[in-house]
Length: 163
Image (tube, rainbow, N blue to C red):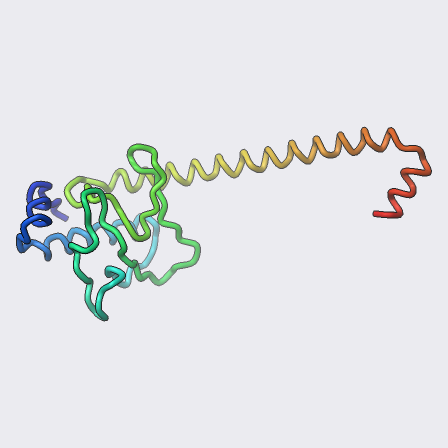
């Protein structure tokens, strides 16, 4: 899919140049690539205030940094989270917005690598959480053993009956 010239995009936004169809085509390409990378079956997409069967007005959903408030209608919606780390390492939920620069830049590599980076970061975060829980549990068991040693046999038996 052909990229849109950034100057032409800026001109269109500011002066009503008739290139809306080209912009919609590029947005369609970006949304399709997002779905492809996340293995989602795209039915259609539209802006959240669009009339039935229409895409809606692009100009109401694009600013200097992003294209926003679109809805992706997909078949397999189970647990698909369209989240990546962008080229600056910032977490980005692209389920209803993406950087405007993707309209005039090659973004495919950033999208693919961003998904991988996010998944790797999430896996590392979960492993750290698991390790932290295991350490806390081990410390709790040590404290419990320490506390048990301070109790007499009668106190320990009363505690076990109460629990």
